[in-house]
Image (cartoon, rainbow, N blue to C red; front, top):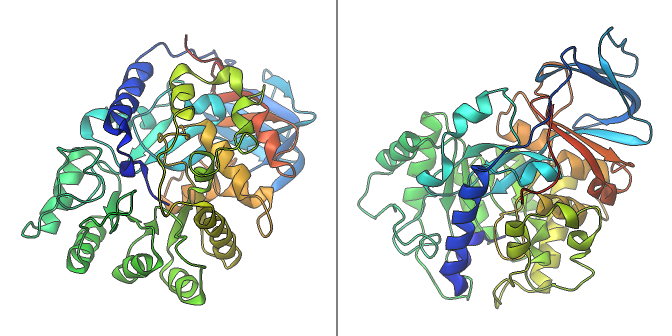
Length: 433
């Protein structure tokens, strides 16, 4: 599904506002609570460890680290005890497709890590220092693609007219080196032949695509492809891409795509909450944002983006959205790794809360709540090589989400977040005034 760079809102003015506000909010006060000096423990809590469920377990936290997870674990003397009866403890959620720099908005909704797929260097700040630190913070950690890789006049240049682009005579390897010098952790390559309104636009050639992927692999970087058409997805897979930034919906998924993806170990990111921002802006579809468990925690910036209509498109219609969901479930059932992402901020979708909407939209025939939760925890951690998060296990970062109820059987219970810990510190769930 297409990313925010399709949008010319007003269209650039809207994007400019979206790009500016989080920089300010991220620099505002971070309201972080103190953690007990001797550690703390959840007892009698339902545990979703990123892949499986423990009906009643114990989780031990010391400093910024998990030190014990299991059904029968002795709680050390001096640990503060937290009663988990009727509650579920989950790893901090991971948004596998977002944009912009880290802010305090996502963690209030349980999203403690974001995998950014395209922004400009001045937006990112020193994200590597932040994510390496275990100091108190209310911001999400971020891994960034840096400047997305596109051609002059290609997808992405609508939003960023001064974007660095790869010309026909430019050296792809040198372009990759420039992205690495900017601090990119992975690369996003654009294969898109049409604008949001359906008009044609230039894109990377097959030669450029293969050269970029080869250069990135030689330098140890994962590559993701922005694609919306199945033929382009097959092209990217054959060229050696690590993952697809969207699940294609131009036609029903077939064995060819499934077999190629499985053979090459390619993951795909579902941005299935798109219908909340596009063709289906019915009240029922957007009830999550009005839910009393959610609405009071939305910041002014989040509300502004959620209330902005997504521009009409001749091809992003209800049939396309239905096909995208169906394809996602078929791919997951066949064993293709599926990750959950928002593509936020775009009109109607925003960082943090829209990941909860994405997970809700994934649940349906062929995909249960436990599998959906895995798409935002263990699956993205595995796909991006994040070895200290995405699971509740000893040695991992104490990024935790405590929920009233049981989202492993009723996914909408994920709306009832009672507490979030980042690096072992509780954060304030109320938005900054």
